[in-house]
Image (spheres, rainbow, N blue to C red):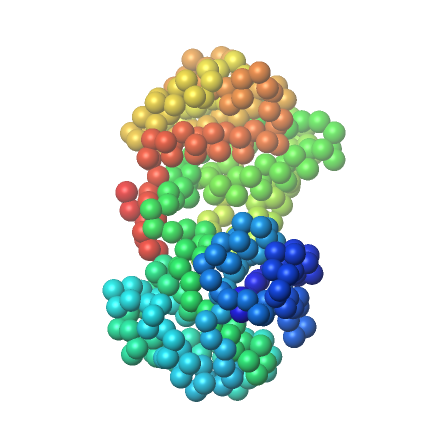
Length: 358
């Protein structure tokens, strides 16, 4: 048997394609009424069959070769795992147990994980690693049935893993000076929302609103309201999605010229269509971030950053030569461009099992 997990609503499509791939098999979409599940019977969970599913069935999110089936009480699960696990997990490997329960039971998934994990350790002497295991034991419970599968740990796709660059702390060193957008009131607030969401997405160090000439109070108010709305909406999503607590980006208002004067001791990078292509100055960008704790980035609106300030800039960069980037996308384009260059320069910390290191 092979158990397939799909995005909810795609079970029938996956099942239809699986039936074409394995005409002799019994393919059961929404097994026992559960969305996102396809069970394939009368088929061996061989490497050849698993590889065929990986290649042909795009809708398959997880492909679990079932190595054993038993009753769903903890005693039966422990007894079954103890008998089958030895051929799949070596003593020098690490493992984790992942249990999903469907139906009502007198125990929790954690109870199953603990009992099954103990059984695996007793049978193999392997070590537990809940974050980045070499092998994963999947226990899929459907009411009174339990299906057991063992896969490589790489089958579990995590957002972060050891060796992956970690950018958040570096981006917190960036201070953005954003010239406010001026236009139709409805557009002004929408523009503010989009820029605020972008600033919070990257968790930059601070967002300064930097007008360089008089601006109507109600227009500035609308722009600021949009920024705060955008930052708040993104921050609330981050709190739910992140393992680490996100940091809310502060908003400040300062005249552009005074902002530059106050930050003249820091490197200043200006984004402008009059600048040099980012790829041609990537070494300078890397050098700036290596040598400085804070970096100022100036971003224009429909008028752009005044060219007189170019004299005080360490770099003036063109993010997309030949293209004028809209105001609501300029901050995002600037940060993504910097991330790309800095990753090549190995500026970012490296994620190592829950800790960040250089």
